[in-house]
Image (cartoon, rainbow, N blue to C red; front, top):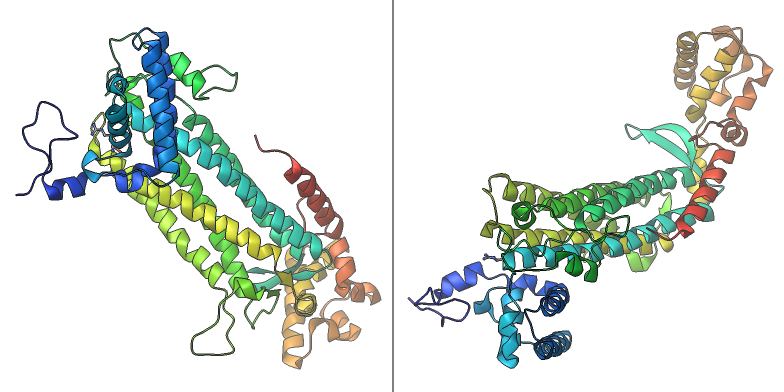
Length: 470
Ligand code: ARG
């Protein structure tokens, strides 16, 4: 059996881990991404130790300088990560102690268990902020696309069958609404992320006189009132990954929304629908069929949603059987979290960009929207307004639809006599029902796809999306 030197281990061990164990247990190959947060946390912890008299002024200066040097090396890609040192925390601490003897005091009153929790919380806090920014960008793309095609109407569908006419903008704003709820879920998750676990030690705190509030304040962990936000229970603090799961859950729902949008894009850009034109740069060709222009970006957005949902499931399974408190299983949280964050951020970004360069084909949309059957419900409403109970009106119009179908004409092409023979309440003005512009004007309720309401909603979002995110 080959073993590594005893580097990451204490006096307890006579042997380092075997090669396979080192490889199996290391996390530095992925948790190196936490280096900024790890150094930031160490800086705050060291300052606090100095204030509390557990680190000399000179020692603090040395440690801060050492951490700066390490940060610069990592940023320049010159730092040598060592798998034998297991994780980002041990790698940085070992590098510090190698150059600064006082580095050996940095871990005073701290455990990797509360250290990894603080690193993750800092990382996720930033990530949520940047994700919310790109989601804003996608919302803006959708609003702008709707605005650019303010006049365009297309069929709304249920069961993927033509149902009733809607403005393109109304359809797009449905996604803006979904994304706004995602925003609020992310913000809400962010509030619970922003709590400082440092001072919890391995699981049971420490006997040393740490100043937790100072550390929390230095790292920007604050509640809504600006007070330092700290975990209240050391055991909970080192074993809790709710905050990771909450984020991954909000991200999974966001991914589901992106996937639905992607599906609409795939359908709309097909020859069968022909509603949407994607710019060449956002499509791909076929290696065999020269004519093909495929919506691969949208398909991948749909496909990647599966990964994000899978990550959430993996995390829930990871946590469900864990006894209190920290268990090494928890190391498995990072790849799922990083993958989720990367995947949703990239998907949102590419969809936003693609839609900024997309255009609706007004003619194809108009042709589809002109289908008189889309206004069959308006025809029933016409009778209702003249006193007929809706169920009767529904039946009457159903009969007219069947008649038109049998005659091979459209609903609006039937003669007034045909209409009147099915029900005498029909008069000459029934023709107006099929005037699409007027029909869109009749949809006046809050939330309806009518002309005025669509304009109001577009204006609402244009104003709202300008606001800075909190
Ligand atoms: N790499 C570990 C993780 O990601 C850090 C904490 C290790 N703690 C321990 N007691 N082994 O969870």
